[in-house]
Length: 198
Ligand code: ATP
Ligand code: MG
Image (cartoon, rainbow, N blue to C red; front, side, top):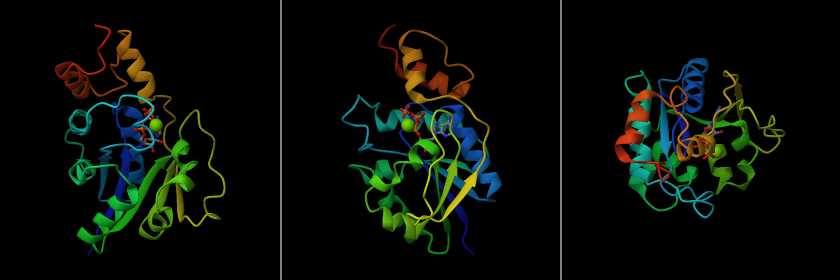
């Protein structure tokens, strides 16, 4: 018997409670056995735009944040594969390691609107059911079914939190507490991340 596995990819620079709340609620709503928080090695859509923290640092934060919440796992699959991170490769790797698993790709509204630009998205469509979660600041994505996706929508608490805002907060010394789990805040301090202003 295979498992129902959620794949929630991100840069997680840093991870925040918006990510975690989305992941646990998608897991619960669709009866998934586990959700992998897959840390992008080189996020090809972002790498040219700003300095991204090292993959190992971002993974350490995800690992700390997940703690022992049952069924949530930090995944280093894309880090171990190296190079640029493509979801199509990640899903086909998971398909090979678990041929009987049912795969669910979890994305927020902002990302759902961009899926047509993703590498080999037809391959992704064949490998996984798309799970779309609401996110404040982005519109409800249109036309996904027509574009060939098998889509399930899951409503999660609206949390207006982004890593971009958290990096700005850290830079000017404003608190990250309660937006980022305390275990991950400690990890950010210990690694001296985001703290160029201090
Ligand atoms: P950045 O501001 O650097 O882009 P981010 O907060 O958008 O960071 P990402 O790592 O880019 O975080 O996002 C990973 C996934 O998490 C995406 O699918 C995104 O839509 C989703 N996500 C991020 N924040 C939220 C949130 N507050 N509520 C729901 N989904 C979210
Ligand atoms: Mg983002």
